[in-house]
Length: 598
Image (cartoon, rainbow, N blue to C red; front, side, top):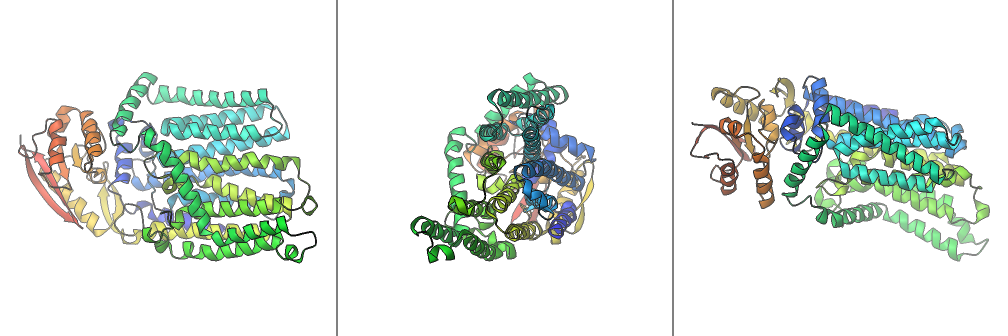
């Protein structure tokens, strides 16, 4: 497990200075470099990532490594709380070999699953994952203290710290923060030994922590009146696209969850058939039945885990194939996205099989083990809550928040060992299979199929200056040539680093690489009526004087009707008032750079 984790971290670090995405990653870099250009937003994420970017001297590689360090530290905080609570719930697990070390390594692997697409530049997914991990870790640590000594002050303090973490999440993605709070309600509801008044005090302490963080934000980042004004502008902006409306998402999210669960079930469907057959035998076979002896839960569990391990081979061994849309299940979800949920479903099915044995066949339940139900719901719900608030389907982004699910897998394994005498080797086998697939997806996936980068990271090898101040990144030859030619042409036209470039459509990475800034908003999009409406509003945030002097960078025809509507809405006389200064073909696209001729 340690070797898998070390290999994956080494590859992530090796790729930190390689590749540069033109689209989403360009937004994350450009907005973090100039957070004042995206004040009109439903999130303050770029104020926070901008502070990190500034701390590392605006070095993109160090910015990525800072994100990796933050993810791993937050996973460490999660593990501290998790293992303290786990060992109180199941005291016998203390005597298991290397239980703390194994859980630490396994949970850290869950943390770096974030990088299976090499999507390394810190963004709102990163900060949401960090806030979620910290929140869960301190909540579990607090409950461990509360279970040991009810009513102690340390429990209250830890709930307050959890509130600080959740408070930061409110300003990154408020929808996720609200649902995470709902997960806490579910946990405390099922947690025995916490009375009603005590529960209310602890929830109020979380609320106090959130208020303290809000106070810090309003003092250090942006005042409450200005924050609300910018939020309302940002809400109007993103609603213009048409894919972010609450009316659409209220139906889309449940559908996404069902599709993810069904896809996860299909991955190990033979195992579920085995468990269903065993459950049927438990119901129908009489005492002393030979069939009952053959299909006893321990045998079925061993066979099911063995079959699941074999079925897992394809997901881990051939990463490229596992990601092909054509090979997705009937649900349309590729196996590598639902693989981790598949193991959770299988472990829950196995647990249910053991739980339906006769009372004499299982160990008497320790009262602390009854807390398992609330913790399972808590850990199961956190990644779902973290995924809400994006235009993407939930199953596409849920792996960014995999730490609680890896903790849940370990919890279910320990519960099977402690309550039903399952061999520890089975849990170690599950961890080895999941860890191996995770490492393979991170290593092969990030190197061979990095998100929004045209080639694998191994071909991103040509040193290229990007950004302002300039730093060296390694890019593929096509991207290197494109950036160099555009930057040279811009310089001949009088462009200086830090000057404005209006780039259409969705080219923030090129603006960043050329050392420019985008007036009013990091990016402008065309292609749908919603994108045009969005871009008109976004361009309206810019100062007219800056727009009039900005270069215009296009990856579409200069006579495009929507382009004229967009630039005309800002009073720009395009194309008559501009001269073309460069035309560069890269791959299947042609990029044109224009300067004002007045």
